[in-house]
Image: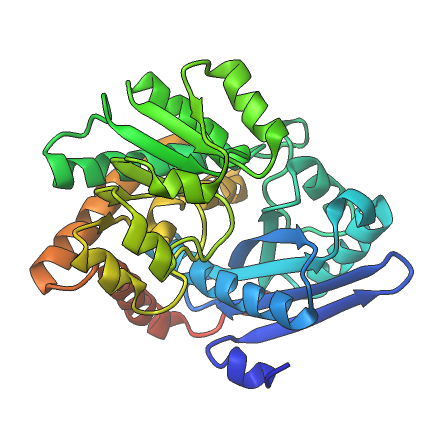
Amino acid sequence: MSDVFELGSEHEQVVFANDPASGLKAVIAVHSTALGPALGGTRFYPYASTAEAVQDVLNLSRGMSYKAALAGLDLGGGKAVIIGDPATLKSEALLRAYGRHVQSLGGRYYTACDVGTYSADMDVIARECSFVTGRTVAHGGAGDSSVLTAYGVFQGMRAAASVAWGTTSLEGRVVGIAGVGKVGHHLARHLVEDGARVVVTDVSAEAVERVRAELSAVEVVASTEALVASSLDVYAPCALGGALTDEVVETLSARIVCGAANNQLAHPGVEKMLEERGILYAPDYCVNSGGLIQVADELEGFSFDRAQQRATGIFDTTLAVLELAASDGVPPAIAADRLAERRMREVGRLRGMWLPRS
């Protein structure tokens, strides 16, 4: 593995958490606390190697800093990954051991749900830790953050549609969703209700069947490759990162890319390829911040109506990003970075690194 200090040169702190008794092997990355304590989910995933897990958590935590800054939250960016298959490794003992490690950071990092973890898991972690969001409603939490993540992506998609076609409606548009798990499922419902023709794919046959059982009008294709190659107006990557590769961008017929997946651009330069092909890209961390807004609201005593109202603002934020991109002559991904970095720089220099209050 490469030098961690080189890989995470922007990061304030990277913690390796180990508990042999429960099988816990986790990495917690705090990217920035310039705007406040870091908040980001815990991903439970069977990484092929520790190096792969470290690279993922560094990328994801950096994305959370930008996401929180662009969303106007007084929060920094962090993320955690637990290495292993949650179907076989997840246990109360492991989650509680993980909670103790998060607690040891003294509030510099707040955790929440992500791929492989759920609100019920956050309740278990909270038995050992005070810095947990995304808890179940029964325990005073916001519940499943995918609800407002999907709602925010839908708002971002409406904003992109207004730029591309002069209307916020997706009625009659063909929208392809790659990944219909927690977020993709909710997004499909919003789109069907808006009159869009929705085509989906997922590696999980069970996930596809759940969507079809609720939304009979949804069409299904066998693979992401088949979806990308089909005739689309909007492509919504809602699974894991790196979805927008050179090959995908060259194949896409969609006018808009707007989805919930984190770190969609497979490498620097993809955003320019999208622009050259006339594809309007709504930056992932701009449109998928609804879940962060939802769990952040827990810190004030959760109100769904208040959180949803704040997530509605993703429409205006997306428009601001796309307008800056047009005025500065840069791809939307660069415009989003500029807005986020401006806020972290202007506000962060007044605050410095966040430390636990005594």
